Every structure is written in structure tokens, then in C-alpha cells.
Image (cartoon, rainbow, N blue to C red; front, side, top):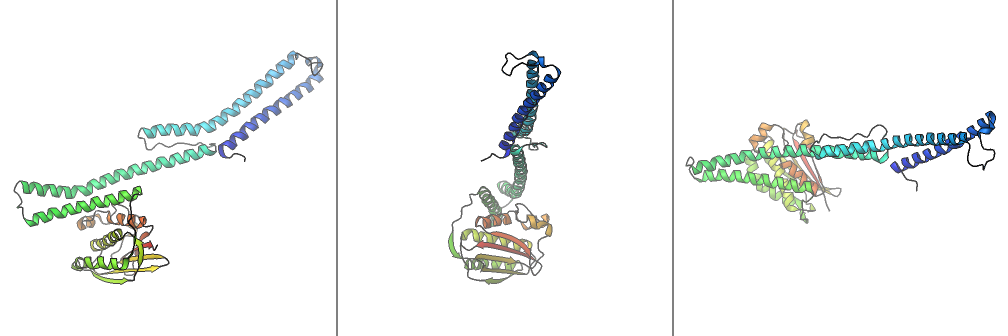
Length: 354
């Protein structure tokens, strides 16, 4: 099989050099002998097997050899430059990258051959990904520190006040401290789930369960809190046996209902589920105000919020929907947010039935 890519270019180039030099030698000697026989036959040997060659013949052979050699060197140098320029650029960029310059990029050049151009393109893609990951890592660190600072500051102030006698050690103070600790625990657990999902180690304990019954159980558990916040539940649940991690599915339902409680205006919450086309479809819809269009593409990213001041007041960490997406995708499903028929947000979770 004829080689491809860089190997093909090398074979073609070397073959062209060999053919060109051979043709040059044959043609040049033909011209030399034709001219010599016309001008001065004494310049050439009297017989084809005469030895040694005459002086003019020696001079012509040496000259032709030097010209052929120079042509071969010139062609090989151009070919080597086309191969080595992108390789040297990659090597230089690797050194810069190793010293922390994440802006380093290799250049292939206009005449890069086969695999060398692919190597440069792949290296640049890797460098861009490293730079993006570094930026995301810095953003995550800043966001996590920001989320941890508020509860830790509150805990420190309360405990210092209790230790110095500023606050009385009564149940109200202990309940406040417990609330902050629970918030920290939820944040740590959400971060753990996202970390496991990103590394591909979010393990699921699959079992076949009726998710309609599980959703009804969670809705009933949260209904008093939702009613106190001005919401009323409307359930449209169909029996839906699905192979899933029931604990994680409960986490999804609770996170979505908690999201509605925090950000939607008081009104009706419609919760529905059914089986359709081999998939389990679960939906939660509220009365508004919905999700801003500019936020929709990033709604399920970590630490994404619409109105930041409102989010801070509601106490959300910005991780709830990111965790939901991680769990849904770990099940092989998908989640999206649409504009509902009543002008609010419609969250739709689709899970494979088997």
C-alpha cells in the first residue's frame, strides 16, 4: 500500500530529486558529446571504453556532479525546512508552556507537510484547552472561596460571641449555627458530586423503581414548605418504572423544587411525569418570571446566577442546577429549561427507561 501523509511527501520528493538528477546527467552528457564532436572531437575519448577520460570529460563530469549535488542539497534543504519549521515551533511552544506561558502557540507555516500540520493543530488545541482549564480552575477557586467565606464568617462571629459572652448560649443561637453548618455540608456535597462527575467516577446504584411514587413522596414532603412560601402543587404523575439510582433522582427532584421555591414568584407548580418513546420524562413548571434568555445557555453551569443580589438573598450557592445536570447525564439522560405555557420556567428531565 502506498504510504500517505508525510511519508508520501518524502517518497515523492526523494523520487523527484533522484529522477531529476539522473535526467540532468544524461541530458547534460548528451549535449556535451554532441557539442564536442561538432567543435573539437579531440576533447572526447576516441572509443567508448577508453581510459582515462580526457581532461574536458573530467571537467564536465565534475561540473555536472557538483551541479546535481547542489540541486539535491537545495531541494533537500527546502524539504527539511518544511518539515522542521513546524516541529521546531512545537518544541519551542512546549518549552514555553512548561514554564507557565499558557499563551504559547505553534505555527505550522504556509507549506507544512501532512502530519506536521496536524501535529501543530493538535498541539494548539491542547494548549487552548489547558488555558481554558486553568482559567476555569481559577474561577472555581475564587467562586468556592466566595461561597465559603459568608458561612464561615458567620460561624466565626457567632462562636466568638458565645465564647466572649456577647451572645447567650440559647437554642436560637445553636439553631443559627446549625443552619450555617448544614449550608456548608450541602455546599461540600455538591462540590463532591460535581468533582466525581467531571472525573467520570460518579457511581450510580441502579435499581428499577416507580419514579412517579418517588416524586409524589418528595412532593408531599416539601409541600408544607412550598405552601408556606405561597405555592400550590398540581401533580400529573403516571406510573413509570425506570432503572435508576433512586437516591440521586430524589436529589434531582428536591433541587428543582428548591430552585422554584427560591426564584419563582408564588403561584402554581405543575409536576408531571410519563413514559414516552422508551424514555422517562419529568417536568416541573412554574408561573414565572422565567429565566432570562441570555442566561439559558449557561443555566446549568456551576456558580451561574441571573440576578446576583436576589440569588444572594435567597441563599443559593449556584451549584444546584449544575449538580442536577451532572446526575442526569450520569444516567445517560438530558435536561433542559424551556419557557412554559404560563410564562414561567419549564424544567424537563429525560432519562432512558432501561
